[in-house]
Length: 612
Image (cartoon, rainbow, N blue to C red; front, side, top):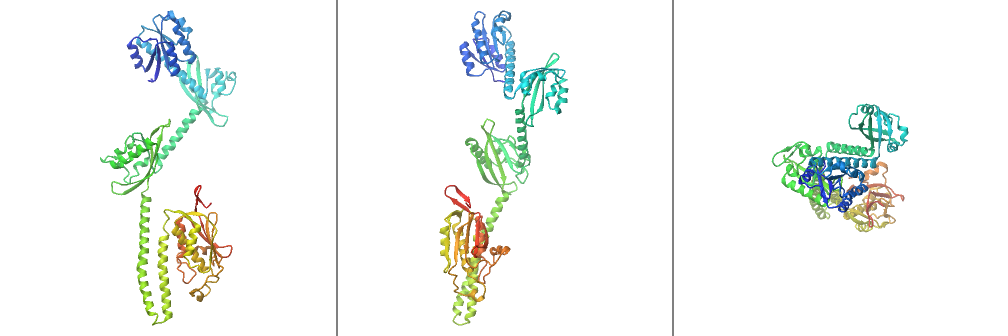
């Protein structure tokens, strides 16, 4: 019984308080108006499930309201209350199509039962009309399983002439797989009942129907309603529900839905397994080992007060502002003192009417990721300390040895002293290269827009380029760490100068010459490749080929007697730190070519892009 059944009461038919009380107890609310004019204004303004009006035989003009109501809603019940016996007013009431007549002195229960019966019938009629409009409906008469009468609407529903259906079994309308079941059910219908069946659709799918049967003597009256769309929606909802259940049961992620009061309504099974102790324990020591233990509870029932307060505050932000909180990192400790890090994302949860019903949240256990990052940071710190210690502890004795060499140069063998000096210079250079190797390999955390032309020219100034020339054929701006990009170009420029001369390693004498000049015609070029940049020279080229080219970037690999083998390995590390790839090849002009790909370009109009 619905409490929303509203009656429009006209001209004071309810003169006893008991009648009003009984109608309210029977599930009705009502609005009273004085006359027919006011009644029609209210009826046009709002929907009512029925009209109750007073009638005196001396004033038949009041019954005009029945005709007016019928013009607006043919099925809406009109209950007339009067003094006269029904026989005295029956003809008049029949003419205006009144639904029922109740004498004013009849028991109160009679009025309530009459109103309830009329309103319920009206609701069923209205619902059937809605179903018919939504999916189509038709009627038929069946005797002993044979269709004896078919309405045009039923024929239209099945796309055939109604007369062609009459005389055939009702089960001919049905998919063969359902025929025996429906035939057996038809044979046992003794009171109103419903059944479902389906037929093949023209598109290869299925059309779904349900039929309402009502015995009428030796025949059955059937109302056939198509609910294909409704069935599809139900199946879609069932499929969505099954996917949600699978998500909540099997995915190792904490997922939860909370209502507007932050009470848990649905949670994933993993919620109670996110804690390494395999259960949630609140401040009072109560444990919650199963997901269903969380339903109906807030965070205050489950967690420490400080954590709960923060979570509820986030819930209010999401609900009140329809905001999304993304990737909130939280650090806690388990009951055993173990560190636990989580990342939480919360968003509004909307109901079917588009209103915020609460919060949906996802919490990920990122403990391994956070601890790994912290360990990596500690490792990088130790590497930096190692580089500084190495630099400090080795450079001091090198400086002392070089000081003594200056003293000994006037008294001892010049050649031996020169050899020692070269060794010390190599050690000093190694110290610088090792330090750079450690520091330059760290990831670039905050790249910024850098002009390739400007940083290349600055790098060129810091290198002893002798008579070589630099050509920069791009004005691109890229995202990079400017100091480390300059270091990368310095190493490449220095490599081009040192290795660009023809036959630079053909003899020891030439390798050890102090003032060997670069080929005046040597040109180093920085160009854009379309997806990155390249440093190219037209010198003597690379002696390596194939897999040996990869060795160029290995730490300690060098083809020069005075080389440290760190220059190109630092180039590779700086490239990797930016997320770039680097490769070496022989250039089209015979020199060396070093290409860098996956370079992020700064575009003033559309932001960052990759190698456009």
